[in-house]
Length: 621
Image (cartoon, rainbow, N blue to C red; front, top):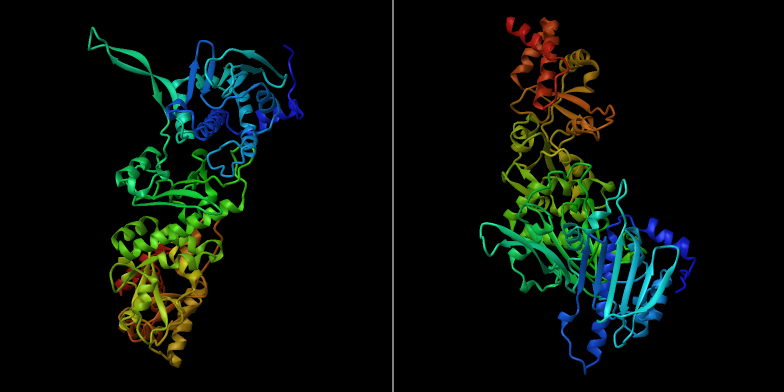
């Protein structure tokens, strides 16, 4: 029989199909199984509409058969089949969708159960096969036909005998190449893995003979291998089931099976929507932060399915970075795909789903905070830093959305509190939300700068994460209350201290000793029992300077530091005597006080040896 040429600029287009559209060769099996599922759906449609015929859903299945000896892989379905004309049109014309034609011909508006869209998936077979044979017998016909092709040279159609309705696609798998191991597509374990990965939730059974072992009849201590039909796919996805049908352990088992994590999920979010955009969502909030979360290797994103077929393992567009720790999946028939069903087009449907997911996660976390406080605090201790990054990044565009989810340690409550809880307890005359920064709670609690706020019985938020102060600066205020650091150069209702002429002269002398290390020396309005402290002036705090200096390609960012001295502390009497009688001693005292204030802040001393020598010199006197 004469060989026919593909239509529609066949050679060039088929070359694109094989070499350019698909990123991974393994995708071919997903495409052929999806096409087989379409064929089964079409036959199921006719069987439903023909009330005279009785049938069982068990008659509808897909079978995968690997023959290593002959290097063939066969995908068989008991679907609607194709006649000669349809083989010619659907396989002889590249990018003609038989599924689309079927929907139009039968006026099917609801396409949620039909996978095929573009009519190119079949040609992905040529990525792994040197030859493709299709044998098909159409529903309610007696004749069967064979379509065969070795690629761009064209195809041949001939009449053959076939007992059952349906289609067999027989691939002659290519020989191994230097960088491609085509043998894998004939291995049972690899085929099972591909089916589970991409087609686990196809609603029709995917059957394959698998190798088992059993004790020998004549010797129970020895085992023999045998083959048995096994349904590989799960068929009914958990997210399509009703919540009342599922138990907590069902969700947990699926979480582990999908390798979303190795811990027990802290929260499960299972929801669906129908309308302009329909979708099912199953999300998990892990108990533990993934070990690689803050590394460049971590990839956020949800699994994306379209009609139960896996399209991508990590759809990053579905999650914002601040909820990047969430695991799970989305299944929607309405997401627009490109021709290869591999890459997503950035369309409004996807953006719509992403927005709904974002709002749903926020709602669930808010309810957890309100109704399951202990569980939320567990969540926040692990993931709070990520939420606070979300407040700070993108120029604070998400700060109002996230501000009610963040928590800080309270000096009064001795536990994590929300900003709303803090504001609700503020004193009547208190103008600011006070905070202090440091490496840990104990260190902050001992800071000299906190004395003023504690004396007023003002609650202080202790900021211990490196991102905390950046987030607070981005927030600027909460419920019309401005944030104020206890180390700020400006405080409300503070003890007003007026420096006399002598004090001004002393500070001028001490400032000259420290030169460019500080911007100024002032009489403190906040210190009560401590002799000295360092505060900052301007937008960059001392704690922010430390963080910025640790960043890659760090610039020389410096805080405007001000040394504050408690003029009512006994140390100031020593300072005055030294200024009058021994200015060399005052130089030593000045350097010691400055270095002490640095150490209190958790900063390093520029010259540790010099600092030690200054202390020794005072001790000797």
